[in-house]
Length: 132
Image (cartoon, rainbow, N blue to C red; front, top):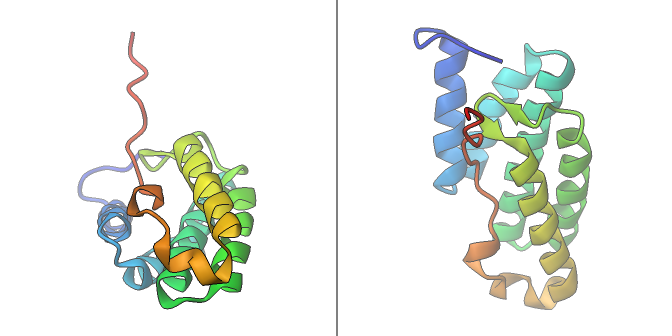
């Protein structure tokens, strides 16, 4: 998915990435939902997957263990349907980071979820440079 700098959807995607990475997961959900509604195929899976990771993290922060755990798992399934690099985001890394966060959350259980390390929180990273 390649967008020009003056493409409104590209601006919305950039805004969603910034929101996600600063922990504004509710706002990120709203932004990615707008993108998801108009997309199809692998791109739609990417948007919905990121959206679900954001909601999982929002649930985690709000203390909703079951919601966070469930959405971590379903987000990974959606992201596996996306391209490894979509919208400039390293989807492969996001899948791995989300899996690690979900595993740590499951191991911590409801009583220990608040103590999870901030280092485990998934972020949206740029795709690795593929030029030789």
